[in-house]
Length: 288
Length: 264
Image (cartoon, rainbow over all chains, first blue to last red; front, top):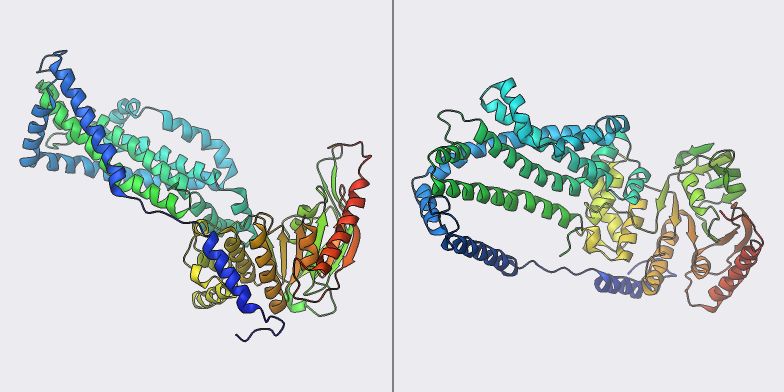
């Protein structure tokens, strides 16, 4: 190796360096799916058995609390005639539009608050306060403003989710280690570059948690909205649940409740938790 | 006052770093903490200066002034050329790969994409981390992270590298190997270095000159040129002898504070 003459030990030195790199590098393990899956399956089985036991105990009559078997056969019928899919599609469209809007608004508000001390002291605690407001309390106003319409539902979904998303971004930015901020300044990042290359990526773990929480608020607000704001010819999940309730059809009601639960869980698992995990893993914060 | 002169005016006879009668206070009139008092320092281009001192010697303040992150209370700081600062924690961006962390330093200086690609590859090779280009900081060892940080400092085209106990958190073997590495890079590139450490052996191992600082306020108490040829070894008797000398100076300095009444 042609290097500076005084370094006749260069090869040895490089080998030491490479050897230490191998020895000291952290090792990672791959996640296995079965150890993750079986506790969930077991939990479902236990839940269903408890439900069946309560039904068998005769605590309530069958017409008020039907057992899992009759509920799942109703659910199966709803699946077969496509009603689950068409209703879910109506509801999911609202969820996607509402959540998408909340995401845009939440990011803009969060970003503004993060980069301005004045805006922060003015609106910071207000945004946190909004997040604790039960979304159902917005409906009287929403109906007054928008009547019984899509906009009324959208209004409440956005108000439910946007503060959580903004808050996630803000708390994510607050959690950036000072050494990272200092490194950014030392590298010459100022103003927009500082925001773009240091603050925004640094805030991602908090933001990911915020999008997840925002989704759960959006989904709850949407369900409240669909139960209160029934729009004719739009067979949403909430509308069908209300119809079942007025017909005192407990089996159908519980079947739709299961649909709501499953969609909520799937959206969280397939989109939001996955996104959060990917961010944490990339940032070196995941503990696996 | 802090003056930064661009590298174009860099000439051989003017020092890379010049502190003239620098003082730095914190707090208000009543509760004034004096971090540095009438501090004079000249560092020649390409010189490797180590600063050792007990707690409260104002070394962090000094580095902040040199890195232009803070301003003096009185006196002037002149640095000729670009400065880069390295910390005990590598302070890499966890969301970027090793290559990405070097890349961002270039990007923030508006280096073109094509040139960045070449420079990043070159710098990774310089610190012997080409294999780890795509790894993220949490996948690297402490020593590897510090080498990425060093490469990042080079990416800033730093003529002056300021190091605040960069190897303080590393184990002894890794530190030893990184001393060799830093010395090799310094001999190749001859950047001006100000290296702060608590470890007198490290100071004797690396420095052309070791400055012993006083505490509260920080001033230069003593200075010791290390007249040893390079490459040096941490465990050589000559380095040990110099280290003993520095220790002696430091202890004298610490003893002076034995009768201080003021505890802050």
